[in-house]
Length: 594
Image 1: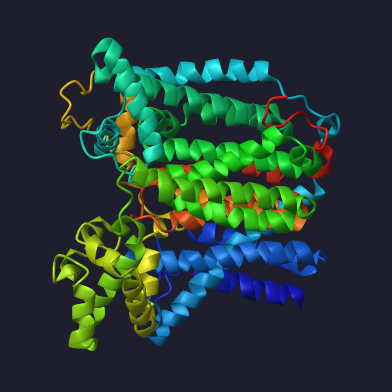
Image 2: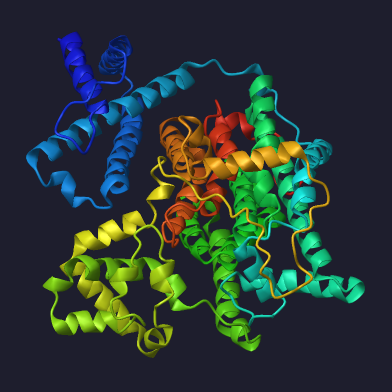
């Protein structure tokens, strides 16, 4: 009976796995029958083993991962093909196809999670894990030097830095050729401004100042990467894996490209990684962590810097302390005091220091982009169902009356650029009430608009915009312009490959460059933590808080917004899958470098 049920479910899964969402027919063509026979037998074996497995918790956590991933896959596939969800259930055949596709992918993801959880559970504990581990700052410095050897050629090619339009806007904002604004992080702009004006005073060159800013950013990134690598070596008991992870830090081209690009998102991601190191230290030994004032200060400093560096970082600052209150129950006083201090400094900056320094704060158009997209999509699809008064109220918030003609479901810039900030400031409550009223009347349009504006960060099969390689030279500062010091052929070959990759998908390989793929690996680690390593679930919750903020960004597929999930993934992977978290209580010294 068990075997028969396994055969039936495996057959349905194979059919559903090959089912295309946009057709009424079962598609098994273009693939050798023998291959699909092997897939069928594999699914049968996994389902059979799962039914016989007595560990209910293992099956539950594997199923949680599988069902969630399959659900989002179906949603993402439908959005990527038709930019809407409603057509999934428009006909009975479409609905059946969708259910089959969902079931097939559920079995696929469940097979991966079930088998890997099972192997990790039964894997023998490494002898090395019980011997402890000593953190070495000397090794950190050695790794730092090695990483710099790989990164410096990119700096020499792109000197004084990769001058993309956004980078130059931030540079010009910093030196107040345009009014100083909090749009590109006023904190970072003030630091850049200080460096540029100081260097200009001694050299008469803004170009040199930009070069120094870029070099400092590269030094910070490579040092934190070296520190992180030394930290996670405690979890890696295989030399080959250890080498592969180091090469990922050293050779992964996105790291090197971003290290020479002055975007606020890059340092934001570095602070996020530092915070992960702090949280992992707390998970290893919470008593030692919370008894160290330096470590607790570093943790809450990162919680403060994240929203100051990038506005949607506020989700981490709000969500994480709330989780900490449940996770670290014995240290609620320290957590509440730290959280209160972060909020006090943050709101002092927003409400007192920004006006005092004559800094233009971020405009509502940039904060509420997802709401604007939802409203405009609703007008585009349902304006005939609105009253004249309702439509006019919505139109008043945009300079272009027929704003829906500018609507792009994958990027909010055309809409937000036409948003009337001054009207919003007159009565913010009126805008929010109008947004709520319209959403209650047309909820599906709101859901679709929101998902379309962020599905690149949870659906792996989306081409990612990695960078603008054009070395934009349209700056108002004549002194700032691209001036390569040395052109190295292999770096230019990598850049050319990235340019081609940026708008195409190479099978399997594209997953290495997909924030959506990295996110689901985070989810996988979170599910395993629920199963075997709950102490490390705090790491997943940190990523989840960041992911919530990423969902509010104004573009579907900009790689830099998800860069924090990528740089933190090696730590989360090896810490979450570590054999025994208790073995690590004496495993070296935490992020303060004791």
